[in-house]
Image 1: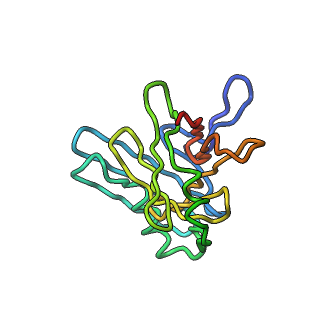
Image 2: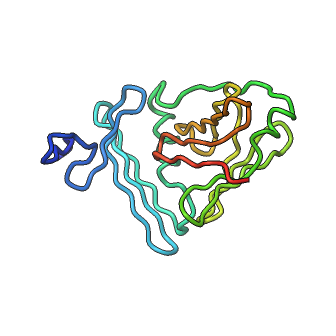
Image 3: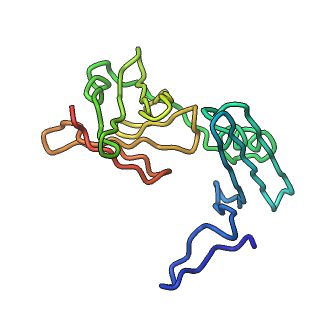
Length: 174
């Protein structure tokens, strides 16, 4: 039940009978989540340490999966990466400010707030505070596993932001 599914073409996917399956910093996680208007839930299980976490919310904008991960990290050493932001100049940060096409008709908005960036998701308006890990890679305390990777062209102009965790790629449009 908690084994990856093998597709007809032989490819393996991290999904088994309704359960998401992944590895976080070497720890197996089995999970399932869901939402309805006004509600959200997430179940996370870490079998090797016999830890299960259930998060229920009377809101459809709460990241129950992140809450579950942060709770699990209180019990599993090294589950979440320890990251230290570096300092970038205001002019360097300003180079990332703009809109990035996420899907047709929807754009991510990146703004600067002091010594950090904010990225706003168009659906639900969620805002991620982006802290620089390097000049091109940023991380967010709101979702500790997500990287936000900015790419520059040959002229040094920022052209895109990629979020590998969700497989998102967004080209700069302004």
